[in-house]
Amino acid sequence: MQFWEDVEQGLSDIEAAYQQKTQSPSQSQPPSQYLDRIRTFAQTAQGILPPPTPTIPYHQPSQEHVHGLAAQPFWHVTSDPIQFPWASKLEENWQIIRQELDAKLDKEIQQKSLFSGDSAWQNNVMGAGWSAFRLQRLGVWNGDNCKEFPKTTELLRSLDIPFAVRGVCFARQQAKSGVQPHSDGRNFILTTHLGLKIPNQKCWIKVGGEERGWQEGKLTTLDTSFEHSTGNESEEDRHVLIIDFWHPELTEAERVALEFVYDLRNKFESGQVPVRKPKRLVQQQKQEKENKLGLAGLWDGLFSKGS
Image (cartoon, rainbow, N blue to C red; front, side):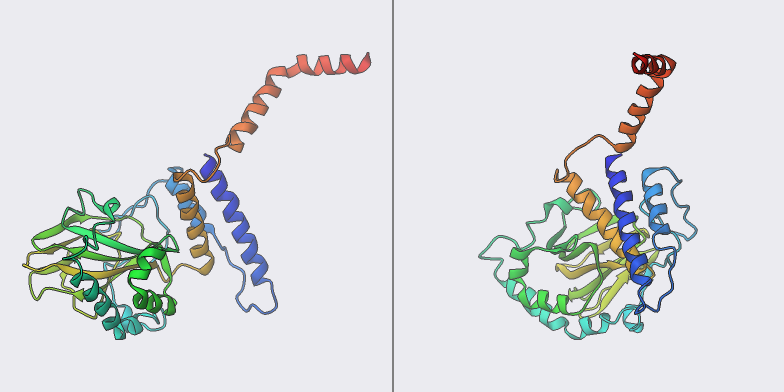
């Protein structure tokens, strides 16, 4: 309860800031219902409202859901420079990333595996053959990891990509392994894979029942709230750069609000927020105490005043 009370206070503060911003003479955008969808998201996440009902085959949205967003298994981001101006530029410069990755992989024989440090992502769904090396999460760049890929980091930060809460990582799928069918649930985040080292055959990703392969230097973009899985039946490892970014139909205020919610959750889970009694509980106990006193308390009060 404390978490959601803090969420509501934060949403109110964000909404007030955007209301003030749009009232400025320099702003041409009219005021709108800034965070109505995020408040509905919060109610659904709490179980106050029912979870979303899928209307598209293979779509499996979770309780962490923003209503009204377009949903499709794959997105063609490079063909839409208005919504995704960074996509073509990333493809054009993919060799920068590939060269840094190759240099690191060449050193793996002498050093520990580059991909051994993200065991938190290992689970029954992803399988032992999948591993990652994270550059960014929750809006925070991992300084030590970014030093391993300075040119890649500089390129990514220069493209003004609207990074979402899951962030950026290199991902390896070992030969003869795969990721089981699953859904990440959150429909407000899209995920793109930049192909870096892709086996020539028998390496695929299936989203919403549609199977595709990766291409080196090309983006494969998906909505992971659809059921998806991968397979690498080849004799070689597959490497991609994974970037999570906000759904383009979210407003700026909604993105800021979602960043706040997940940053706050991370702080709660890591013990950075002091525990206090929820305000609702404090108010309830106060009201119960007043009700218990009732007429007796009122009589005592009047009597003491008269004396």
